[in-house]
Length: 128
Image 1 (tube, rainbow, N blue to C red):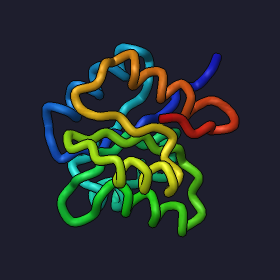
Image 2 (spheres, one colour):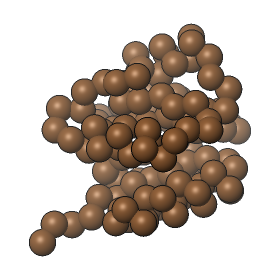
Image 3 (cartoon, helix red, strand yellow):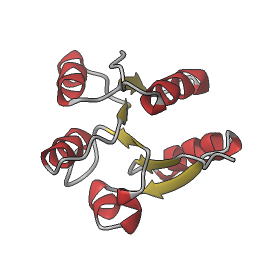
Image 4 (tube, one colour):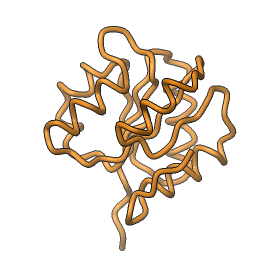
């Protein structure tokens, strides 16, 4: 019997967190939601996550800043970014920092699931 992957969802918008949580739980994932990068970092759940799905623009610490910090601490946890404000330079920065995927809100559930499947697969191939 396989153990379900733990997915951490970080977004300052409660409705986005709830929607992603519901989608992922319906697919059998264990989901932990956080309103900020700081909340995630202070949680013991941050050590057990299989993938982080994070909003790019959050108060205090951006999603890209969180990824950079985690990489500096030696974490290779896959990251998927979502944003309501798509910008090519931000997308490039996110992918260069090590993000697996960069999705613009609103996005199709199938697009998120495709990114998540790739993030959890061996090799962590970067996609756009």
